[in-house]
Image (tube, rainbow, N blue to C red; front, side, top):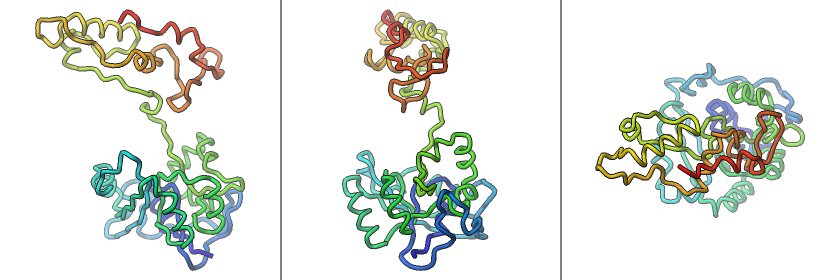
Length: 298
C-alpha cells in the first residue's frame, strides 16, 4: 500500500491549513484502516522538529521543512504571478517557519490535473481549496491516496484547537466525515462577525465628527446619522449637497436586517433564520418585521 505522508499530518494539521492530504506511491501504510474514526495503530508520535504547544512557529528553530501544496485558483487569482505575492501567505510563512512550494491550478483545468495526478500517484503534500467531492475522497482515501485524519488520533493530537471546535459544534466534523467515519478533508469554519453580517457599512469618521455623532448602533441612530449627513454640510463646502449613503435601496434593505433581529443566523443560511421569541426556524421575508424595516424616509 502507499506510504502515507506523516510529515503532512504533523505540520499542516498543526497549522490548520490542510484540506486534503496526499500519499506517495510506494512503501508501507502506518496503522490500520481507521474505520469509524477508530484509533488503529495507536496515537502517532510527534517528530522532534514539531512544536506541540499549540503556539507558533509550528517548526522549531534550526529545522527546515518544505511542503508542496496544490491550490485551485479562482477567477480573482488569474493575474497573480505567484501566491508568494500575497502578504498573508508570506506572513504565515514567517510565523509558521514552514516553507511552501505553491502550485496554483486554474479552476477550469483543476479537475483534469487532479485526475492525472491520481492516476499516476504523483501527488503534492496538500491539496487546498479544491472542492473535491466526498465520493472522490472516499474512493481514493480507501486506496491510500488521502490520509485518514481520524486514524491514530491525528486530528485530535495535531489540531487541538480545531478538534475542540468540532467537539463544541459536532456538525463541523460531520460535514467532512465519510460513512465509515474516515475524515480526509477539513472544511472551512467561519465563526467571525464578518461571517454573520452579509454586508458591512462603513462610516466617514470625519463626517461623524463634524455632525457630532458616533457610529450608530440602532436603527434610530442610523436614521439620525444619515439625516445629519444630508442636512448639516459635513464636507464643509457651504452647500447641503451630501449624499448620506451610497447603495441601492435593495442593498440597504439587506444590510439593515440585523437592526430588526432578522437574518440572525449568518449569511450562509439564505432567507432562513431563528425567531428569537420562539427559538424556531423561520423564513424571515415572510415576517412582519421584514416589511416594516425599510427606512423610507432616510
